[in-house]
Image (tube, rainbow, N blue to C red):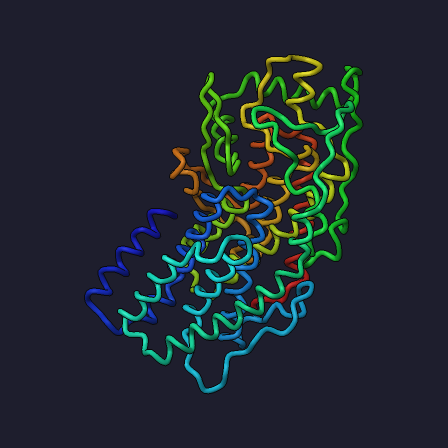
Length: 441
């Protein structure tokens, strides 16, 4: 994906020198939209936002872009107004004014991507370069002004709607209370960080009726002292797997790690490394699929938006259960009751174990992508190359989600029972998004 975007940028630069009147070829290029999503992905990664919060950036940016695109293509796509919770009528394009809707979609994406969480200006250099690019390619001044104005108008409407999702209120909500009782989550090494976003269940859902619409079965009862119990069996399964991982299993775990910020400790030396979060990884997969399928700009925008919606609701569904059950991580249990020196292959993220966020989000994203590109859509995921992790190939999005299920188990951070349940319930969220939303006519 990264190689393709670099190549596209090079082609654009060359054509800018040779042809001053082909701005529509530039703005309508679906790879340019994917490149823009990747720019936001990089900003999210560099600013250390946790995956739950990152999903919010991708969501509102993608919806802003989609609404602009749908307004420009009323015979092909339908506005999300009235379809997702709280979103009223979105501004319509003014009559008689020529607008470059693809470019307006990109500008709206950038406006929301940086404004939802970041200080404004995070993507300004990139936006300025795009504006210069279209001017260099011959976009008339009137079209440029109309396009910028419409993107701004839609962006303001989506931003105003975003501010009513209860995010601001959760910034001042009480922190998670750590209670060190058997079976309950407590902070894990090496960061011993506080639980992330314990009030995310209070965020406004999009398609789900409520955070608890899909409440999974309760976690296995904590019963570590009974060697015949299901819980003890799960503990030993994950410990034994972690003690004898094959190279392939390690690769699977690393490929789907997606721990945005990792604290590395070597003796007295500590340093941080950064990677994509789970939603960032799947947003990258959308671009890979769009490129392979050869879909147009509009379908690319649609695919990103639908996937972002599915992941956003999936996080809310998952976090609702996480902070209802508050279950302990495998690392904590094994260290206390079985082997004080045991460490998982991956670093344990700072929130309760049940259910698994990555498995939930991955299966919801897989359902959304399957609805756009079809089942049995084979692709090679190149997302992790920039982090030194080799590619993996899949026969379908659902197969990728199932592999992620195993990745969390191999990584030693989730019981396999949890991953199975999470995959099932993430799929329910994705199914609901597919059933309820009328996006492409």
